[in-house]
Amino acid sequence: MRYMMAIIMLCFPLVLTGCAEFTQSVQDAQQAVEAGKQVIETGKEAVELGKQVVETGKQLAQTEIAQELQTYLQEKYETSQALRDSMFSGDGQLVVQELQNTELAEFSFYQSDLLGIEYKGKLTADGTFQVLKYQLADPQAEPEVVTEFNVVLNSNGDIQVEQPQQEGASEPQP
Image 1: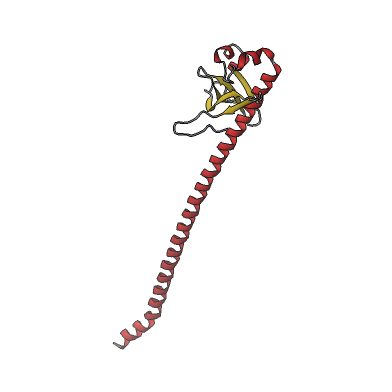
Image 2: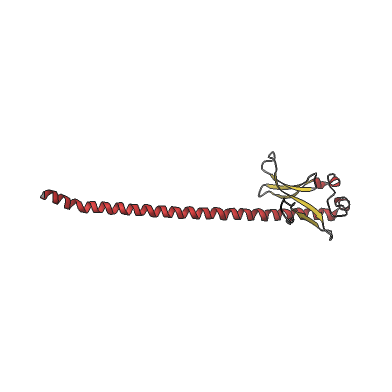
């Protein structure tokens, strides 16, 4: 029995050390799980922020595309009397049938070799301009329809490019 007590007394510190190490391992694991949860939450926030940045980028890109299209059309309008005479009706609306016979039926208004893209405008049968994005590296690829715009002439003789109204929208967006 004495030997038993001696063995137990000798082993007791080892058991306590083992328990302490196990407890520390559990605590470390719990801290790692908490850190992982925080990383996941931070990742979710970063993804949401990324989505917001992408959406803002899309809006800015559409504004830039609209500006480029408007500038191009305004220059064409101002430099060609024949085009001015055939482009708009008295109420400032496009005369689609006449324009289908001009260079404005389909035209390139922005190209970037650096980005490898080209934007072309295409007049549709209903009088809207589709903006098509072409990949310069792959000429066989189908173009992507980026957006559509209505084009009108205001009372000052300036061309206005507006996005068509969506159902349920109260006013066109510039």
